[in-house]
Length: 439
Image (cartoon, rainbow, N blue to C red; front, side, top):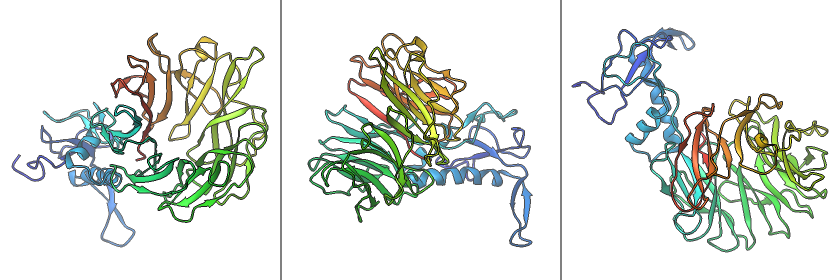
């Protein structure tokens, strides 16, 4: 094309569809088009007054949808090239939906951009932090140090990464931009500082530290200032996890002789134990609305077999007498993760063989325990699939499987219905703890 913007190769050229996924009669088409977006009868502002609206049609109405999607992606990845932004958008578009796509046009409808996946890896001889595109391309070491750096903890806005590192001794908390730039050391304690977790507004970080004698939960500003011990108990506390919607923090504590989950205000007040069950608990995940938590419990059966169950309880402690949603079936269920819409959990399970041991497979299940659905079917060359996490769009999951030649962990993605499983990493070292960039 000789016309702008299609003549500019770096531009994202947008064609228009109507509400029935037909190509609009006025739309551009052909090989210069990159993607389709809604462009017919789009409600827009009107000049009559400050609140008036008017339906408009045109590729000029379709292009803003793509521009906004690109802006959202760039807000979390400000140094990405135009080609990388285009790839992030087109690689996650919905294919085959345009009923009458013009000759030469890509049959792709805008969905949302692919966010990046971060993970820890030993491929350089020590634990380093990596990011990659959601198809496994562009794998980049972003920590670049000989120390042990792990794991990746994204800020809720997707712009920052917190992690723990022993590059200065026992362990400190660091923060850097999503591309590895701007690395800043936040804590300088001579004792271990670990397990960072972000507040929902990305302005504060909670973590655990032994600086006061045993592991306590601390809270600080995201720039490292104002570090405050908010638990101050004689028992160790572990794994703080900030609510996605409120100024509350969940954590594990051994104060009652078992490792139990508690929820408190971010200043340490109103600490509430969530269940009264005589089981140890771990792997907590908040529901997207912050009203419930899912976690796994473990105990030993009368025959001394270790067993895991998944629980869903109210985050305000009102479910203290709750029961697991996966009562003992002879297998183990663990590592629950909420879908972005809060309607489904994904978990690892050995329930298919009636034993707490065996290959760990991926299952989805409703929060009330109904409709368990097996998604993965491992070969004898794999011991299992663990660390499963939903993508921000809820259409896929990332997980790790010990699929390497030395049974080392590699990273895979799978569609939410179990289809289209794709291996993203392949090397002789461990690739571990994959996590999606919030988007």
